[in-house]
Image 1 (cartoon, rainbow, N blue to C red):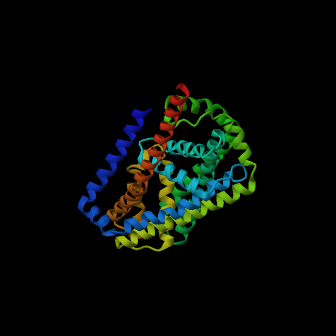
Image 2: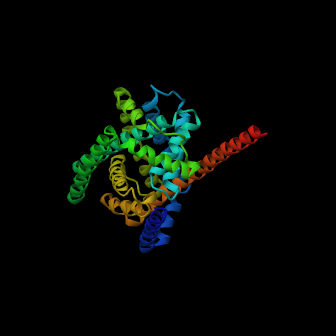
Image 3: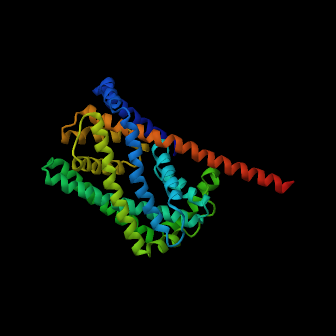
Length: 330
């Protein structure tokens, strides 16, 4: 499994390098450098939609487990850092995010269930975000071929989301509980503890209808706000677009990224998507590729300190556990 993930990641990285090389390393790098201190602004701006996403996650469990918002912001930062920077499938970030909640006292089953429900609501919100982008694309007279492919993709996504929700209600996670515990036993650093009752916890969270609606709506606002990153990056790059154009570009690009979830970090996929979709709004291929690289830099600016902080947290827990065991033996 690890080998196949590594192969896919390397293939995506090679594709990204080839795309940039074909259109000119210097041309693309000059556009990225033109952003200058705007890279920091893009990174700081990303914390806004991230905070909304954290609010949504907190709302999912607020009636069962109350903790301050910073707990969820930190867990969300780690989720994204693992998904974007480590060579694992995106679900790896969700598992680590659940683990972070257990550090603050959440029962393992509740932590795992909260991630599943939050991820589902975020996917549903993304579906409507893409639908909004599609409607706006039709209104501005966008490419008919792009509209057709996006509509077809949304139809498939709707079926997949419906199937995932039905599977959750029909015991899928009862079967997965044993698998997750085997993973936890094999890689102790990723252990969530005993993760039983995930299925029951999921059903309990789904009965909180008002909380689900509030969380889903918050995720939807988070997706809309995230379009500001594209607008901001292109502004600093000297290729400004309107916010609505940025929203269309971001909604369609994330839909394609989600469809290619098997590619770690969407390597190559993100680059090709921005390059192709950006041309609808008069962006050159070089600008689309540079936009993708700006987002990669943002991931590094936020992700590297987060991963270091997470590893310090893990090391501290291991040290306490080891010294606690030593004191018990003495």
